Length: 179
Image (cartoon, rainbow, N blue to C red; front, side, top):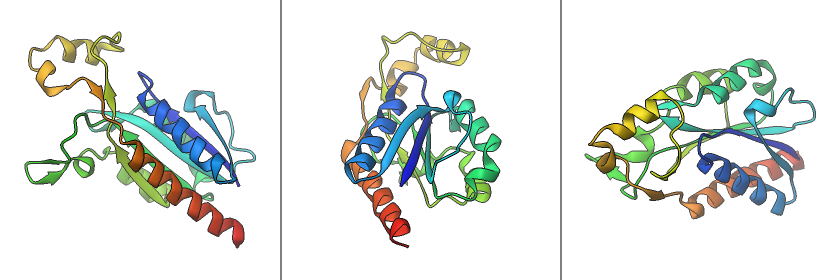
């Protein structure tokens, strides 16, 4: 199947996840291509779509949300999957709650209602304190003394979990193609 994997990323971590999903889908015989949401003009030819974005302070990046809203009618007729990246660190539980569940972007409820995705997933992200901050919120956050403790540096993406989720998408696409 022809699959569009599209994403919004600030520093490249989410782009890396989208590329990994694309590689997995291609290795499983699908025709997947990865494109930033800002470069997608139309969905013509896509038989399925995976949309991902980084989340900051529990919100999906606006370009991804705008993309999903702009193409809502078309996307609602296709198999769609959503993912988000963002939580940092390796702790999966915090105060007795699953970090990935509590990090789910607030916009996912709206998107699930309108797009009826076949799945949505939150993945751990990456943070490089040496990277140039983008936007006022990042500049302010990094200037706060507590930010160093709250924002652990490193690449926390769980490639096994990403590969497993992409494999589940490939399985569903295989089932759809088989009719």
